[in-house]
Length: 125
Figure 1 (cartoon, rainbow, N blue to C red):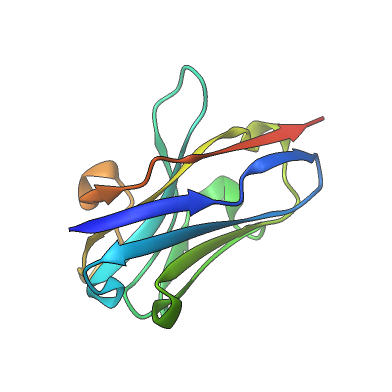
Figure 2 (spheres, rainbow, N blue to C red):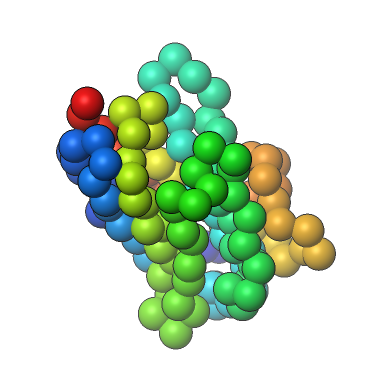
């Protein structure tokens, strides 16, 4: 089992930045690929970014490329999402997730077995 707790959400003006953290406990975090998803009101949960077990490979949803950066520190058992140049359309509940190590990075909900409770990100115009 892996327990995940997100933090770092909040209210920010358009163009601002936030850094989300996802703290993991339980099994060794380096056994898992990890990712970030988000869900806006009335919409499906969607993929944002993923990172492999070592941090050497990442992938992003097109709308966040060049603005968001996913990273992880396995020694600290923590994953991060640095979000710059935030837009009102980034407003959503952000979730972190952990899943088994695979050749490809997971970009759908079914690729992940463990989820955090989420943290709210609100971007005002």
